[in-house]
Amino acid sequence: QEENIIAFSGIVLDKDKHECTLNERPLSLTPTEFSILWVLASNRGHVVSSEELFQEVWGDKYFTNSNNTVMVHIRHLREKMNDSAERPKYIKTVWGVGYKIDK
Image (cartoon, rainbow, N blue to C red; front, side, top):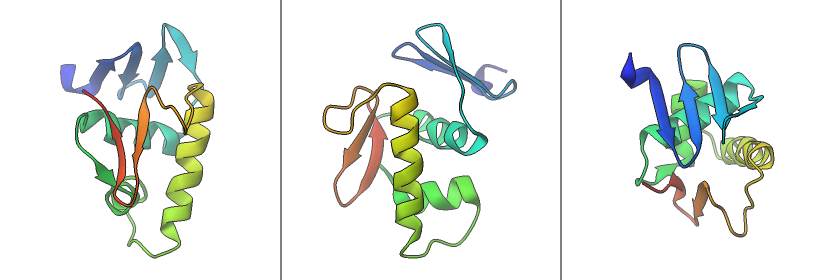
């Protein structure tokens, strides 16, 4: 069961309950946002490309415009987490490569 819970930097993700808390406050995430955060959190310290995220979360073939889909969901996720794109605390953008959450 432990592999179904990820905790870091005040964030707790529970895959079984599909719940996320930030500093013990529940975050209301869509299933897609939860999946994106789960993939990034599972790969902490590693950059996950937009292509990898798209294929993992949507289970679909990646097309050029798929990057916009990923970017919009990352933006919504950051807004809900009060994370800024310019000075992110959680989800960092690695320009031209993808996204990552530090260990």
